[in-house]
Amino acid sequence: MSPSWQLTELCLEPLRNLRATPVRTAVTVGLVALVLGGLALVELDATERVLALRAELDERGAHVFIVRAEDGLPAARCEALRGLTGVRSAGGVRLSETVAPLVAPRLRFQAAAVTTGILPVWDPGYRQAEGTGFVIGRSVADELAVDSGARLTLADGRRDVVAGILDVDDRYPEAARWIVEVVPPSGRVSECWVEFFPSASGIARDLLAAWFEGPGNQVEVRWLRPPDEFARDPARELATRPQAAAWLPLGGVVGLLAALVSWLRRSEAALYAVLGVRNWGLVLMAQLEAVVVVSSGYLLGVAWAAAIAEAVGGPIGLDQVALAGRSAASAALVAMLAAPAGVIPILRWRVVDLLRDR
Amino acid sequence: MPVTLRGVAHTYDGQHWVLWAIDLDLEPGTATAVVGPSGSGKSTLLAIAGGLLKPTRGEVRSAARDGRGSPRTAWILQSMNLLPRRSALENAALGHLVAGGSWREALTVAREALANVGLDALADRPAYSLSGGEQQRLCIARALVAEPDLLLADEPTGQLDQRTSVEIARLLVDVRPSGTALLVATHDQTVASVCQRVLALVDGQLMRPP
Image 1 (cartoon, helix red, strand yellow):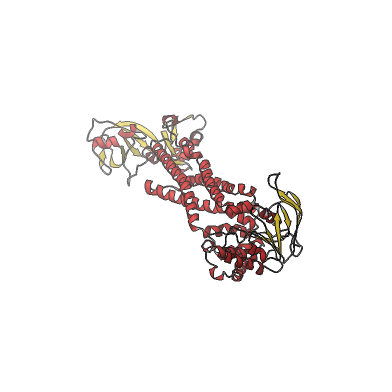
Image 2: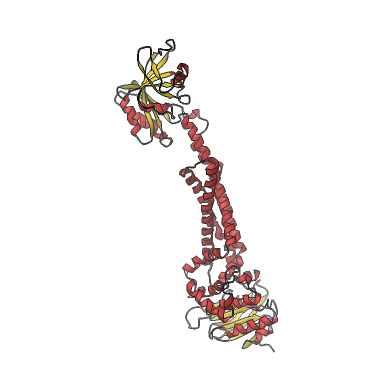
């Protein structure tokens, strides 16, 4: 058997070459970073838009469900939904008679008793004030010119502080003229409002039906806003984003760039062939060099894309970086696989001819 | 015997024979020059002897000096074939890796080889910054580091001036290990004159010059 290079030395040689040519290495890594980082940046922008859309739909109650039953629902069971994974909040409401405030006895407002969990479902930005008292809709507050902490006396003699004001314009505008009392979860409620996290929304209907259904108790579960009410769907927009398949051509472009670099250095490959490196060794060297350059470019590219996205659009989530990183990683993988292509034509040439090219 | 060629003939296009009926023995420790004009097939002969090219016809037998396995071959070429950005030391060390040595050992051996060819002071300089003569010395050092059974030199002084050519030719013959067979293709009489045996390649056939 003829003597040959140690595998370790064959693997280390590309690193020694990269170190010996810092300018070429930096330029190549920079170009790879530019392409892969560009893809990551576009992906970060796309996820930012999708997240903004999802937040907007969330805000409007895209994942809110209302459960009703002919004989009402147990309030405690409704509130207990809050303990389930995937449920953001849940609470019940029981309507009562209309009421009038003492200061304006001719104005009538809807009164209702609710359990605590319904308030953030109606108004995601609602913050419960300390202590108990009436919670009133924004219209009630405006019409009576009262704010949180003010005392409100009703014509029927009930008197308490205004513990909070609900902004229900987005989700349940009818409740803007309601005066509600937060009560413990006992007895029955006429409706149970449940908000799910987007990821759990798909199983909501079945879960709620199973949760409340019992012998002779037919429940009706409906969306606050049926999905067809929204013209846009974040999940669909994420799946059909134009750049979703860009990793393949971009990876190919980076791979061709790496292959071109190998091609331009073909006499170097020939020299290694003369120095006893076999064909598979030349491919291995080209592959390892591509792995180092493309990986470095990938890390650098994703880092600068994340930095730019954060500088321009504010904080970004890890899941966004993960998605952008995955797309760029796919492109990087294609590039790594394509890179040795620059060496393959050289292997078919006669080494002596190549050596004379220099 | 490192390499024996018997009845070797070669054509690239199937019509024109570059080499024809070549018989050649390259004994350990001998220095053989093949002279001839450009395009006479000298490089093809070297490529066949070095195992880079399979002859169209004929037989090439080769063995290491110890009789085990293929002979270790080293090349010195007209165009310098160095890694220009790597240091002289690192370029020389590459020769040792061919023999399965480690990089650390290779650097040690290369330093000695550079001293042998008078380049020890330039060991850390990148190869591109060396003069033509220095680069060719570096190629010789790299070949020495490989401790070859067969040293093949293709127009080693083709790009050098007369004075440097003489130096390189002397170096080539003098510093090689004692058991190494040297085969030089050249049209430079200075180089040919330092070899023990000179053969001319005429119309694809080897003959002793008049």
